[in-house]
Length: 407
Image (tube, rainbow, N blue to C red; front, side, top):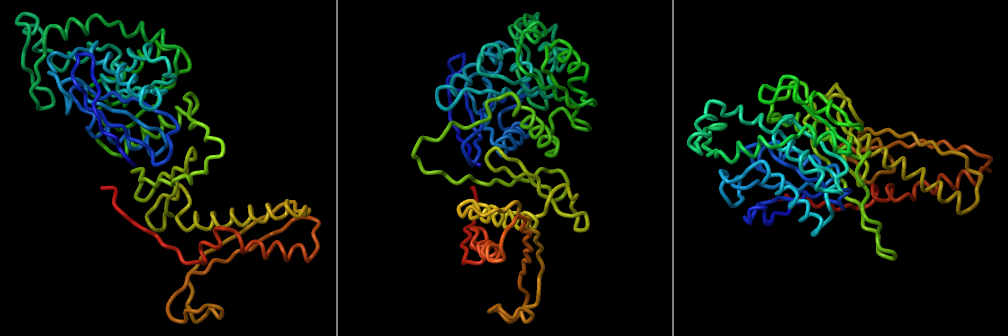
């Protein structure tokens, strides 16, 4: 999946580093992601969630707040208000260059920031928070022992997550002025709250307060066993999958209509590991989502069809569709087609009609049931037409598969 990297001007006039993770096909919608306090757009949770959302057809813009990651400026001069303003400017940039975000996603303090910024981004119809505090001042608990010194001396160097940061009195004053609960009560947007019951950084009671303050539609999903930073890939992928599925109900998840007369562009198929089990895959085809897996007998969880099952499904669907098109064109009284397929490996010498005579061959058996008041001649013609379906022709012709790395 492609990623566009660029800069845009933040509220303080500094250039903020941004990354726009795009689906391989035309985006169904655009989302804006706000990272956690002292994190960056490239921390594990931000990257994994954005990539998983892009795999599901939703483009995600993530950026570094002032003084963090690759963005300009000094962290000590940033405040919660400036972060909210930067989110609004990020939405403005998306609106000007692509499309305005209809989904806002925030992790930890970034969750509080998207809740505060939502009213200033009119196109945003849905908001998802992950491990968000109900009060921005909750973050001061990370340096509680230094608060008095910050107030008396104006600024103090503190250690957060093993890194040095300067916190100024202005940050404390600004964050104390925000009444986030009142803003949540006036959202009038769909809200999804994701939180781990065992989160020891931002307690689950914060999710309860946000949920109670919000008006419907609102939803809560428990991130069982996840840590605050979603450091386990499976937790990040799960969160992204839940958000994407939930958001489809609320956001404009439809690409712009193609220009009249323009050639149809083939949709790309994207397959990505979910991290759930050993083999499970998320398959994205435009707005459609499927799950593939392997049977339990070979180490999978049997949560979806296997690769050969999907191959047979493609051939079976194409066969039935081709027969249906022919029947309609010829006005045949065809009621229903049922195609049953199986795949096996056979010895070449057992295949009289095959050119290869040594080793193993793939054999697909296709049994077609035809319902309708049809003559024997019409049935025979439909069976003949089955062999002309495009997927059948692809499987029985020379195929060139080109593989390359995204790097």
